[in-house]
Image (cartoon, rainbow, N blue to C red; front, side, top):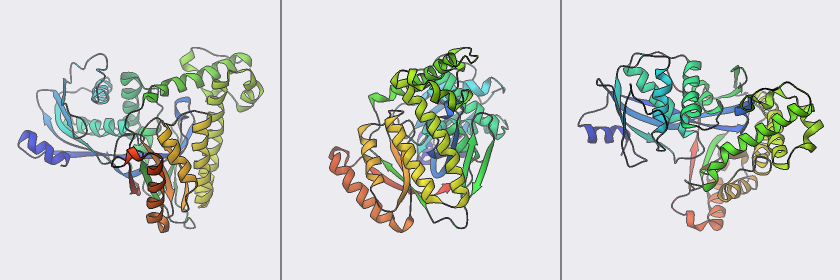
Amino acid sequence: MTCSEKFEHIYGRAPQAVSFCPYRICPIGAHSDHNLGKITGLAIDKGIHLAYSPKQNGVVEIASLQFPKRAQWHIASVPAHKQNGWADYLRGATWALSKTHRLQVGVCGVIEGSLPIGGLSSSAAVIIAFLKALCAVNSISLGQQELIDIAYDAEKNYVGVNVGKLDQSCEVLSRKNHLLYLDTKDGSYELIPENPKMKPYKIAIFFSGLEHSLAGSKFNMRVDELRSGVYALQAFAGLEYGKFADAMARDVPRDVYEQYKDRLPVSWARRCEHWYTEFERVEKGAEAWRKGDIETYGRLSFASGWSSIHNWESGAPEQIRLYEIMTQTDGIYGGRFSGAGFKGCCMALIDPAFEEQIKRSVTEKYLESFPEMKGKYDVFICESADGVEL
């Protein structure tokens, strides 16, 4: 059942419109945007659909094909704190938008995700698809950067996840057949077109079958460990520093890190090692893409995945196994976990000529290691896509 069909089933009429936001992948640049790093990313041709109609009484009433309970609140009285449910992202979006725009009309709607949850920035995509609908019924027009900022505000300051602006930026700014090369320090970006010399590629999404992981709570901890390392480096080097939350790796030169890294606790040093080496990989990756060298870009993506396992120390066992299989499979240029690395998906850039062989080989090897994931594990082949249309 689609979101439009479910809407008609619930309300007895067709929705007024359907909002869409694509998912994204980030082959190089993971775990760096929260400290003002650089990233490379692509939107893909799968994402979040929201079938909706206005509610003149100001009520927001949202159902999801993925979750059982409908959520409801009023645009003028969003709960001051998150409710620890799936709709917190949408409450946060209402809260963030209402800070700068007058809301008078609510929405009723049904959300549908076109891929399993986990690792493709589904939370940001849900927020943005909902913001589009809420803006449409209230005749609000947002620019790209304002949309990115409001979606970021909702997730970071209402839901409480220590994200940067990677997800929102990829989903808004991306263009089909272009690589987004973004500096999250100032929001400047370049859309690098595919070089005519570039070998063909598709995007493979390997869903591990893992939808929930106790390790997920470690995401915020990893960011705090990185920031702790940065804060200590500033002190060791005699650099000016202020509040802990304002400490950013981007503000500490790499030579300062190299000089003082042995004085850091091991875990803090590893988080810093990932951030600084990932920054370098992004710059090299953007140049490789510009030259049409997808093999080098892919190798850098594999190196990013390795660092996420060993330096950032993320990755459920299922994802780590998928990554290992990917590195040993012919026809895969490169890839890594997609997202925080505690549940969900791995992504890979593949040679289309090997598509069926890759699907068969990765599936067989993965299910040998995790037979309990049969029926849950899946493979999806995607293309690059435009970001959200405003």
